[in-house]
Length: 229
Length: 250
Image 1 (cartoon, rainbow over the protein chains, first blue to last red):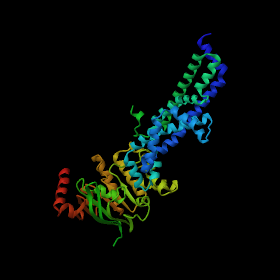
Image 2 (cartoon, each protein chain N blue to C red):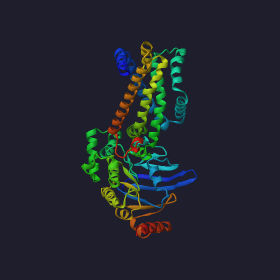
Image 3 (cartoon, chains in turn red, orange):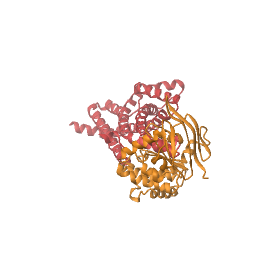
Image 4 (cartoon, each protein chain N blue to C red):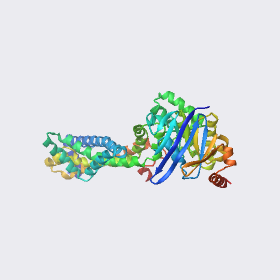
């Protein structure tokens, strides 16, 4: 049997398992990205416009997350929380850990975009009588979000790949699914090749989609890192 | 006697040890156009920014239509700013919004006007400054400097403020675009829009200003009708300043 035939056979026999893995990978990536985005935006706004004590707390959070491995953060969520009576489903624990992790990174991307919005935009918003909150939501964030799209694309692709460490919390994502199939068939080379192709395809789709979104919301005269390249 | 729209009393501001405003005092009456001139570093921009509280003064008193603005605002700062139009040197149009949306957003978000009414008002303002239909849906980066500044003026007038402050509205423009903006401001002056304008445009000041105030070193050193100030300045500092501008033009 040729390599290709074995690949086809594995896919054919174990497609439900691959689909289960794919589903969990996608769910983890999407939910943790969204959670990271919402909290990341709040952290970024808090760090730029908030009072000093809040800025310090948020900055400490970001440094804590960036200074420790994500795997350790997942373990803390999964194994330490039960000590205080919080027992989580592995998938939920992975989603929480990855979301909290991504929030720190996304906040940094958004924060640098917010700071890059020219000061005159903020002053003009206030000068027509907008409150600070209106100036942030109607003027600063719409501009900052557009210029963060390339950085957020990177983050999304990272999350897609890093969701594989949910394996260590026994979440049956793509890599774990491969491991299970491998234990039954020993066709490791074929299985991991298939999985690599799935990841590659997904990340290409994400990059393409984000590029399209970027093009659709792009405003003449707005410089983003990718527009500069 | 016409009522006082803006009253500034003994206004002081310093940055660190540099005193930028040192006891500025003047008032602007309804329908009046006052021009402030003076060398750079005189405190003109800081004065305008203090009036709408983009910069917080250290000491003094500001009143708008009898309501205290500083030191104890009688209303929220944002509702005070609604009544003070501001035109910036570098236009500062919202870069992610079209010309029409730039004018409309304040009406919708700040004045809570229904969208149709806001659109009508915004179009009225754009027509007032000579921005035609073909430019309404362009983004700032697609407009010339003169067009951008006229949209910025429309954004200010659409809010129907009690006074409009302009901070060197033509000094960032290419020379051939200055005229179109000055003509719009003169039109506002003819319609008796109350304005306080920092500018070095002598011809404009002669045509449109009711009074010129010369600022130097944080104080108003001389004030009077444009004729008096430009043709027969009394103060030595004013003479030197006027000559330097005329020298530059000649």
